[in-house]
Length: 81
Image (cartoon, rainbow, N blue to C red):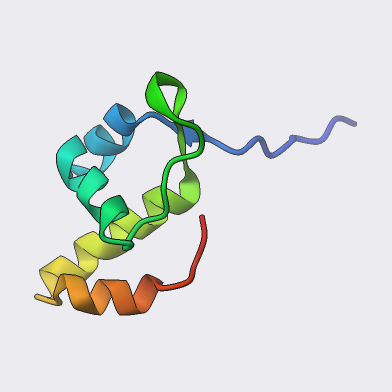
């Protein structure tokens, strides 16, 4: 019997933007502010992981609860994707 292999999903910044509704510019800001870890790789081959997607969705929830970027930074500080 064959087992399904969990292959980690990767995303371009455009895919993350489409999946979350955040602009590419906002995603880059979250990275520069230390709220979101940097992409893996650089330039057009850079990619993001499910962990980046989970964090962006968490940020969406926090925004709905009117939490600030400083709050998010505290929540995600030191965590790596």
